[in-house]
Amino acid sequence: QVQLVESGGGSVLPGGSLRLSCVVSGYTTSSRYMGWFRQAPGKEREGVAGIDSDGNTIYADSVKGRFTISQDNAKNTLYLQMNALKPDDTAMYYCAAARTRLLFGNLLSRRRYDYWGQGTQVTVSS
Image (tube, rainbow, N blue to C red):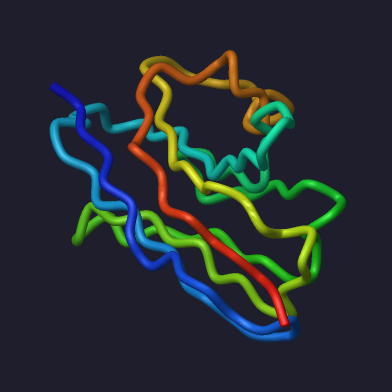
């Protein structure tokens, strides 16, 4: 059974940084397709960053240049480094994994993912 557990959320001032972690267990496929998503109150869940099995990455325009997705396969951990945070980044952040291969262009599509973590809250406020 695949389990994803996020951590690292919290409250931060605008311009600050946070690093989210997602520990993955039971995800035995050699080809990993994973992503970070976020959902603010009253809004749909949206893709933030995705990474394919070759390490190629993709970002939403709203976070490009500020967020970095990475993975440490030895630690079975996915990361999201968030810099220059803005109040609009306030949301619950989720990591997700796909059961099958995803096309690169689909890495930010929430409907393509099969496994989800419980989320970690990020609040950016002065």
